[in-house]
Amino acid sequence: NAGVTQTPKFRILKIGQSMTLQCAQDMNHNYMYWYRQDPGMGLKLIYYSVGAGITDKGEVPNGYNVSRSTTEDFPLRLELAAPSQTSVYFCASSNSGLEKLFFGSGTQLSVL
Amino acid sequence: GENVEQHPSTLSVQEGDSAVIKCTYSDSASNYFPWYKQELGKRPQLIIDIRSNVGEKKDQRIAVTLNKTAKHFSLHITETQPEDSAVYFCAASEANYQLIWGAGTKLIIKP
Image (cartoon, rainbow over all chains, first blue to last red; front, side, top):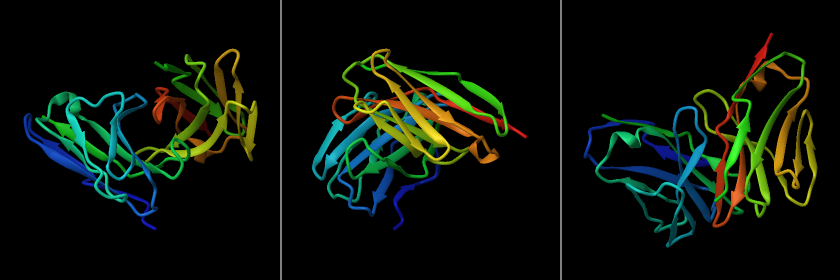
């Protein structure tokens, strides 16, 4: 099993550009999450999904969108990138809600 | 909503000594408290967790204790080794599949 796969690993965006961060898992997990991690801070939940076709907002959803058309994939869309979105983004999945999250390797995003 | 505070932000201990990291939470309804370890440049990984119906849980050199009355929980690492050097995060559950995370503790193991 590859686990949770995130692409790209690094990206630099200009202000106002858009992009999609990809996340895929091959563990047949129903629960998937997108977090951002700012330097010296804990993780903040952006969006989550409890199954295909179901998504909901977390703590910091503004400026982001998600979709969950399949169990495996949970892409995160950034529209009109802003410097405040410079962060490391982690995707995670779980078989049982909040317990034992498996994280992807992260995407380091800079918006300049 | 839930708020989680984690202390200290940096902890330096001699190899072989014990390390203790503490977290406090605000929401008495929280019932799940995991600890994650994040090595430099790597992804967070679960090292131990505890549910609110349990006071203590151990896994080899790692233990977690929970005091529901005081709303705090702690990570204890005994006989620390160089590979324990990392940033440790605590978290507490909130409604709707949310974990509220502490800001992290950088643990430094001195040889």
